[in-house]
Length: 533
Image 1 (cartoon, rainbow, N blue to C red):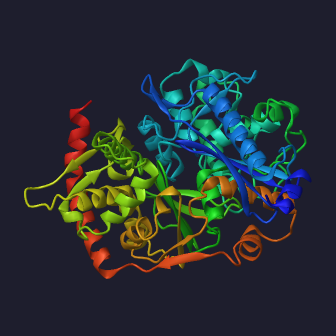
Image 2: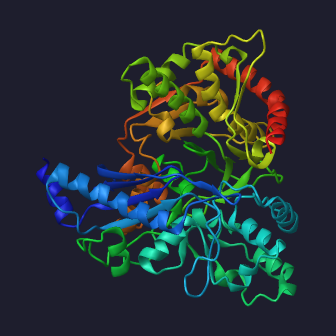
Image 3: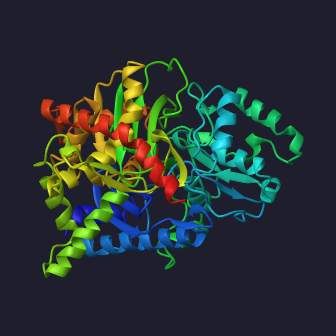
């Protein structure tokens, strides 16, 4: 038992970050400098209900409670103290989506998550109206699609937000968002970190004939830069997290952020010409731009860092879900064969074995599309995961696993090839983070081959967005006049342990060959999706 950490916790100087990810809600407790000291978690999964990917409001509340209780139990076990006070709290969650409430805070329709691809008409019309790419998963696309559909609830909207914004509002009563998360609801002006006023006016004019009692700015949360005052934990919020009453009200919160923003923070990738790749249920790359892009690309989204700097984002709906399903198949086989290998043992075992396969995965193709994948031209709500090969393919276990790992990065490469080859964007540092990078020498090397760039992973690569949320809370608690970039570089990551890999020539050539075949085979994947409708 560490008495120094016990005293830190008892004195209320620890900082909490919570992120609601696609399959797990995770809590990370840190010291004032962002060093993790305890964690908790809660497993959950989205549901496809009435054609909508969603989580229920009760799932959200119960998941938060259980995650916090898991953290509290971990603190008690490791340090022998009861968690009751904190220096700051940060909330993060999956970006985008649609959470609409009336004036009585009643959720008007089930939460429509980022995974839904049901707003194609709205996405196309708004992109044309604004001259700015509006992806299907953005909140404004969901709102406009509901308007196009003539949905009755739209007239009753009083507040529209993201998952992080909803949780933050529930805990503090403040209708705010961090700039990064806000930029995934509606386009942001990087100079002011506020919504694009020209586009706000265009949208209001577009729907003026509908006679709704609200204007767009009235229902959007206020956009705040990192470090801003975003309210304090209310008594009701404290009891939501900790029904025992141990947790005190009055704890300051930083602006709630999306998983993209916390990913940038967790990898120290908030300065121009830095980038990161976050790999989980979905996968996305973020590259902080030096200058605006020269054209509008449907594969590239423009969002911002938590401080408002413009970022080119390639977001893909599918990454590890199908890979996890394959691990589940091998786990089932192990039980059938009478062995005691667990999932945690199978991941590194099979991942490392994949790297013994052919550089082009033996020409075995894998498509991991459980849901639609707009970057790859699959616009349907549901996908159709597929493994395919020719008679001449080398179908071995190593190549099967390598193809599945390649598939996790396949659609990401399609988008980034546009960024690198057409816009000639330069990256000085590309960071990888998320659970997929935990096994050393596997996903990191594959990403380097896919991106033709060196990739760095820190020891905290598996901590993910919950740690990033805790860092933003630390920044809020510090009250420093340093920029977020300087604070991260000087106070958090100055002595960070990391491993950088250069792209291997053989692996790069192999991935490029596989990717060319992958792109040709997309027609077969699209046909499979249509066939299973």
